[in-house]
Image (tube, rainbow, N blue to C red; front, side):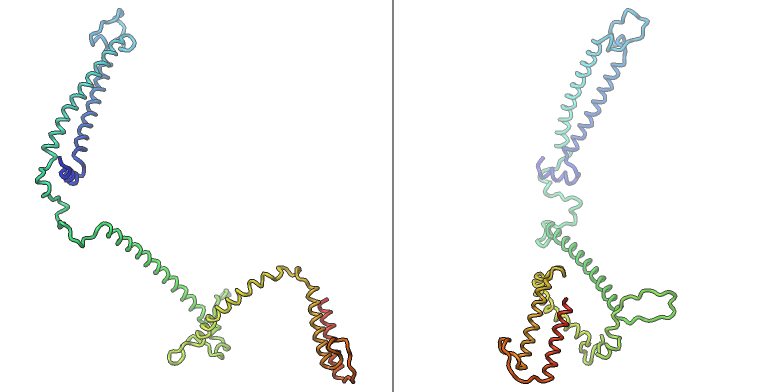
Length: 318
């Protein structure tokens, strides 16, 4: 049997021809072993006297088993059963070898010159050889994967559409003006609303609304929101610049050196007072030299006010 004939029979029968013959031989061997076991059990159940062995002196006693009184009977039965088993196995092997050769040559076979021209039932609708544009298993698997990914994407888009629709409905409810009902039995916590952005009198005074203006222009509220959004990058940049400076500040109020802050404030006030005094003509450039001249009442009152402010600042710091 050639490989082409064996492949043809295997595809037609859905199993190999040798597997069928092996199943038959195994079934026959199982029957032979069961028969030999039944023969052995039957011989052991027969009294030795009926098998031709000499009886014991006490004839009134019941027939004993072969094991205790006739060990030679047990050995001979086992030896005979073994010889019978070997003979049957050899006969089965020889006979079914002939059966296997006859079956493969005359029953489960197809002539070699006829095998290329045979077409099985599930090949009736196929055109052989296949055209060049016939899908291959690899292309079909790739298309299946594309379909699966498309379904996943479609499902994700549907979920996103549902979520966006719910968000839009929620935002619209926030911008809608709540209707006040006087027939409510029990007071309930009102839902948060942003309707004051467009319905409040101050919003109307600023001409804020969600309606489009003339010539399909954008609404004032939309324009202002777009301006706010455009300023967000600058705000983020400013925050990023302030973060390093925040690290230099003390974490607790108790860690601040208030004494140095007071000294800085006192030095600043003294410097400002000195500039005022110099401007009035009472002090020199170094603050120690005093110039002559009559001082007016307004100048004196201004000086007293400066000194009083310094005193109040010191008391507040203390």
